[in-house]
Length: 254
Image (cartoon, rainbow, N blue to C red; front, side, top):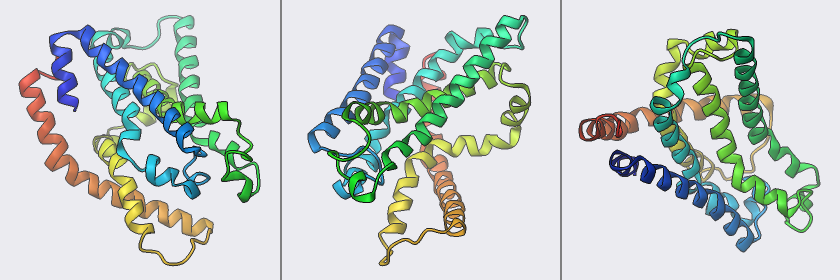
């Protein structure tokens, strides 16, 4: 669908932004509506007894806000954000950038660790919307904004690094060239990793036992496998489509 949005943007930038805005609105409202209709606890583990993980979290369309935010960032960089590229000239500019950096880290941290609120209870209480410690209002806020919040946080950090305005030491680390291959595979890995998790867990007959070493090695195995699968998706799907889009639209409409 990215070429479709690129075509619309190349014809009319206002129409392109309108479509992205409508897509984001749908990406925020639909999770709330589905959560209310199905009485889900909107957390992948706490809600698994009600099939929240299978019927929502594992579905690719639940990640559409990430897709729209990525497209919007690609449009906003050359038209708006690139003009601010370069190190700070004033103390106020430096302060503003560092505050944005804190906001980016805060959004990522809140979107990652905010789910801890769903587990301040016994297992029996955590899996029911009637007894979960998270109120209905905050359940809806979480399911609507946890994924967009993470994406916005990453986008802020990415923009600041691209502008050379991020926190100095982290700027040097985050902009190292060794990240380029992984960055190109990240979106495909993001889409495919849930399928890899399902393939693995559906072949297990016994309950999963937690241990730090088991979780660590599982994490490494899933990351490597996801990146391997993403490499082939990138080479045979993402890259050819991107090249075609570049030829047809001259870089997505610019």
